[in-house]
Amino acid sequence: MQEIRQQQINIELGEKEAEGIYANLVMIAHSPTEMIIDFARVMPRMPKARVQSRIIMTPMHAKMLLQALTENIKKFEKQYGEIKLHGGAQMQAKNIGFEPNFNGEEQEK
Image (cartoon, rainbow, N blue to C red; front, side, top):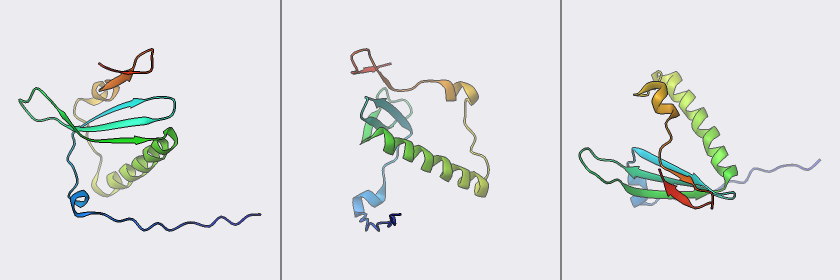
């Protein structure tokens, strides 16, 4: 049997990145090989929202991100209580953002 070694990665966090970017809207699109996640900020009484950051990853990494978020939300709720979603089930079922059209190109909903 082969021994699997875990590689340690040294991650640097620059001053600008450490400040973070606030986003309150996420739009997700995909192709057969990529998941595109756009983080935007919507402000009251403003007709536009500007994308603050775009993350492009493989579907496998997107699924790993989903698992990590699910695990961390469970830990958060165990410590601080349930996170309430405003709008209930209707908000959860609503599609927000972009969906690929039949040509695989993004189209705005």
